[in-house]
Length: 177
Picture 1: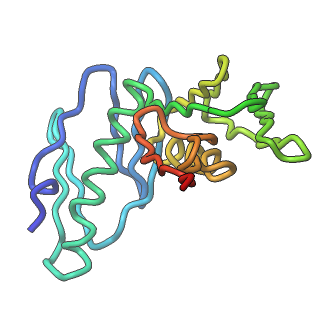
Picture 2: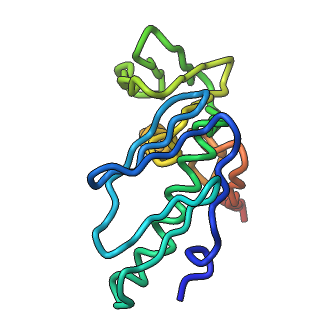
């Protein structure tokens, strides 16, 4: 039994949720998101509440029950308030700038690194802070993870790209005897 799946999801004002074919479509003031849903689950809209229930309780439907309830909750909150991730770039000579739909990074390599930005995301770079925002929580997190993987923070000086709330455990380094 899913604790998250049992709770009903409340639809806020200015948000419209429709279920058609195999898709759940959520429209709000900041955009529109859609996601296909699994046939083992039953999604019902009653007024301003959504309930997700398995058609019959199996191991697979029990695993998907809370997952799809969380997906729908994230979609509703994403079209009302954008999700945001911040990356901090630390190191001498490390720079970032956004040009149109690409982000150019100088990460200490012999060449600049250029990464295309997905159309649904908004990316800004101020000094050494890269801010990624968008309505889809998964896409924001995936793009932030992709950028971070280009230059992960190292444990001795902390150089590299890290999340704003990430704490890096520092190592001591060499000792002189």
